Image 1: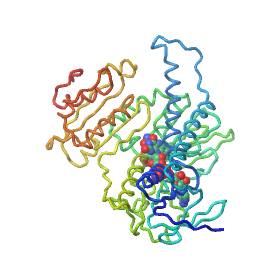
Image 2 (image 1 turned 60 degrees about the horizontal axis):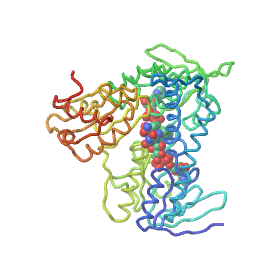
Image 3 (image 1 turned 135 degrees about the horizontal axis):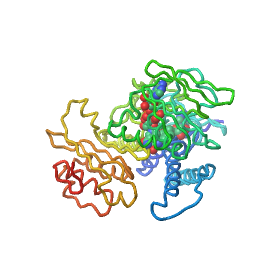
Image 4 (image 1 turned 180 degrees about the vertical axis):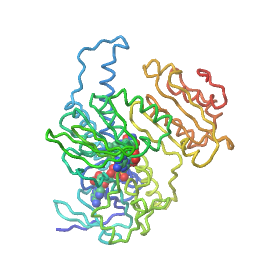
Length: 468
Ligand code: FAD
Ligand code: NAI
């Protein structure tokens, strides 16, 4: 049986790109269908941002309970109960999924379960166990996300080798874990499991983990990694994986011309994610792909095919949930005839290691590579009252100002609640606020945000709570 449905807009994929675009478009009066083949909320809600951060919260509670005597509170026998940690994670994701379901219904978005593929421009077929549907729509947004990239090395298919989705639903905590790839996924999981007492080894191909992050932060993070049971091996190419008679994984790698190996119960493969374009019928509409393997789009999120847009991880531009959502707003505005462009200059990014790393705008590395002269201020958390109250006097806030234009061009926070501090810094940079604008702003006391104030003062050598 095949039904035919006609809409103003059809969106394929219900991640933070697709579902946000669907609700926004419906609020603007469009008749919208949202197609999802697997799970409402996409990778972010089901196997990405949300479940990982729920695990991180559990680890923080565990650490706080273990260290509570520092605050004069004695707690005996603190243990991490993995199945219960998992249950709490599931409660959070279930609740958010129900929330999205409710929001879609309230806004009149027609959620269609099944796999969508292009028959021709303007016509999408949805196949599911309940039958097939044909959707006809003037406008279509592709928001199909990304999937794990796999290495082509012997042993990668062994059952002991898992990806970021499988590790989230492990039935029990492993005693040891090797992580291939010291990027964002690799380092977040390294801290989750290392802090729970698992012996973690990270093998990174490049000279530094988190290659996009400034070296001063990475060097400090590497020290904290050591304290969290994490061994970081850089400049190392993984050659093969084997399983010994005891079922343990042996990961062989080459470092500085020497072949070495590490043994662990489980191996996590985290070497990047690639656009999910399978079975989409893109060949039927002659969509152009970009060199990065994603769907090519312009700054208005338009593909080369009229009335078809692409947003989120399937474009492989920036693989972040908030970018996918923002691209959705841009695509829908353009569909509505409101010309809007994506601006990638001030996208905040938070890496939820311990301490957290949050950045926005240019890094020192970006400025050095571009030969731009800049001034830097760096105020340590240790100079801040609230950081001491929290017993977290670790890390710093860094501001970067272009020497010639005197413009603030980048900021980072490395420490507790860096995720919250970066929001203030993003508003400042995105709105072209000057250092003196920040200096004139009153920040509440005692809060971590005062470090931002002192960092601005420090750029003009006026910091109150710190001297070099
Ligand atoms: P997705 O969220 O991947 O959603 C795409 C949806 O499309 C999926 O539900 C899929 O089933 C569906 N789909 C695909 N093909 C079809 C089809 N043919 N028909 C119907 N449906 C289809 N980002 C952050 O900003 N912060 C974080 O803390 C963060 N943590 C992460 C942790 C992990 C472990 C991972 C893997 C990723 C993390 N990310 C994080 C990245 C974030 O998850 C992605 O950037 C985001 O999910 C991209 O959103 P999207 O809408 O483009 O795609
Ligand atoms: P990534 O690109 O961040 O990191 C992959 C790492 O693997 C790189 O450091 C790379 O040098 C290394 N690598 C590649 N091949 C290798 C090999 N053969 N051996 C050893 N190392 C190798 O990709 P990752 O970590 O998979 O994450 C994908 C994306 O998901 C991120 O880029 C990010 O956009 C998003 N994400 C965001 C999070 C957040 O915002 N907090 C959290 C997790 C993921």
